[in-house]
Length: 340
Image 1: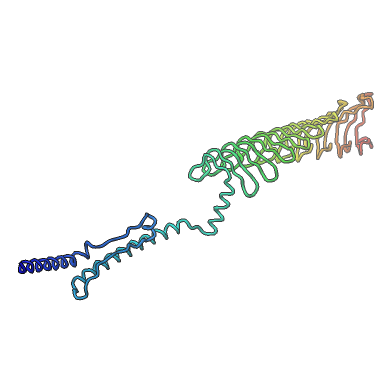
Image 2 (image 1 turned 30 degrees about the vertical axis):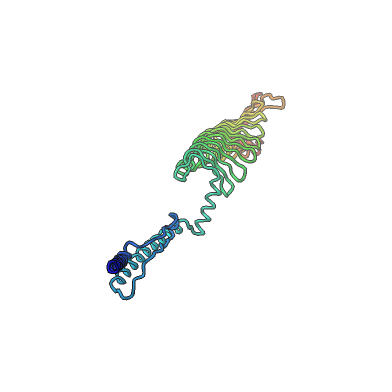
């Protein structure tokens, strides 16, 4: 009985010895526990796994060497993952960081672009409203971030324009309202009055006709604040060419104009129906012409044909009176000075 008991004890210790040996050789690969990161954020920030190893006795150099290899491999893998996560984090931070100049630009951009509608790729396309830090604003159509189409522009000086734009410039038909009440309604090109239009001043005068680069040019009608009317040709904003000037005082001039005055050939007809038909220099009778003279009762006195200077008969001429008297000779300051 004792012998059998001793035998069983010996078998038990042998089994325990083998169990210990198996445990020693299997721990470096199978007996490792790890604590995983709780979320993706911990992985991104380089969460370092905690590893649990079995201590190998100093006497067993082979197991110690194997355990050291496993430990180093795990640490190297952890370090590589941490470096990758750190680089990714730095990249994200770098992309989200802008310079001071970029911040100022972004601030201006956001302040200017107060309203955005129908925008594409952060650019104005279609209809949108814009307010500038300089004080002007625009509401209307855009194309690739450029004002193009129909819209309304308001300026800091209280002027405004409603009409058509091409590549940021007033072009086509539109109405410009001045702060003082004046209005231009007509055609535009390159931000200037070009084509047919009507300018009505708050001072009471009006021009209707052709414009070139913002000035009266071509044919048009000028109505002055006192009621006088000029209809004819213009150049560089003044009467130039052939035209008719009608005064509210009753006289009418039809003929040639230069530099805004009667110059060249023309006929001036007075209210009394007397007239002068001849040469003009700077609004004065100058040269050769014919004039009809009337008395205070608007009765015809006679007719003079000859030279004029400074609106008077000066030079050689002939005066034929209604009573048949003829005075032919030299004249000075409207007086006959002698026969020639």
